[in-house]
Image 1: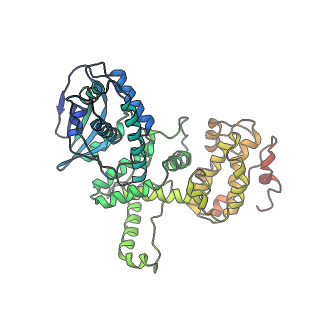
Image 2: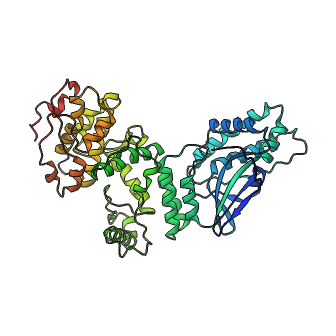
Image 3: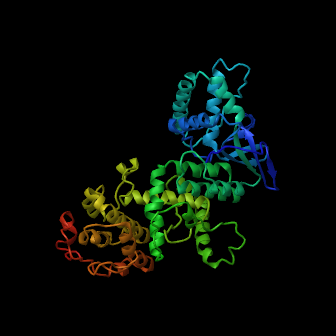
Length: 471
């Protein structure tokens, strides 16, 4: 959030690990700041830039205007931007446009060519070109350009937090809510797990590889993966409700877990099986790297399970990639370009294709999401074992509220998923918890298919006509 500075110009506080202070935009540009490669691409659009200019116009009559916060990490002899890179790059663009103009009198403008993250370089370049073009036009039309430039460089101030330890820097980043392009909760998870990789003494190349893997997946798909599937499955399988507000910043701890370098792991007995599994797969990959690379041996992948704890760092990024790919095979992420070339997992195609026409209908959206979450949970646990029977069972269970009720709400689905029956015609069982308990696919499938009292189910007849033929 931006606000007006009122007193204490230049005040700074110093701790053993943090220095805070207010500095002018001019002085910020004079610093030798680096944007690390793990940062997301430059995503500010013309709308964000126009809002920034409007803010400056609104408050430039004041002696000072606090324009935002930048969090820095003092990494050896360079200062790295942990948070605020969108704003900083925009400042650099404004300064470059101002420097190219005449009519600024004696005003000097610092020119900075900022680092651009290697990840998502095409996205960054496209936004930089559009924003630069907008700024050239917007500033050229100003009759008061010199006065505006002086306000921007010398009266606009930035709160700068400089931290000596990268973990504190990322923790501070997690807690910030500054103006800029809105972050998904998953952006905070990305920052946390990159930090964890730093603490594990991984190389910059390894961290960059994980960020590139993350950036190859559309951010909307990553957010959908966590908010519509992984979070809900974790909650419901543990008999916990999904909050009415959905997956938010306050829930990201759900996907923070085991730190490999934690000295307490030897006594955290619950963590050891997961660390053993990771060590085995890592050792297998290292010892057989050449054979795997040339296709002579299949790799052994870490055995992810949605309801198991997360291993921090690299394994988290591999988990995201794993469940995105698995979700594509289950018919999820329908707005994702990758879904056009995805091959559905054998056994579920018929049910998915029958449900697909109902996907965009508001009346079916909630029950379809329930089916998708159940299908992902089943495939995560049992792969394609008896998947034709399982998909029909899960579809009948998920669609039952829509078959019986004229109106389906989030609260109704939440209670239904938890096994809290609201109608005598609906099953009273938490299938997510049942999946978690089941050791074999047969154990889970050995239950009757739901047969609710229908209320004009129409296009859902394929689920209920001759329903026991394949039981």
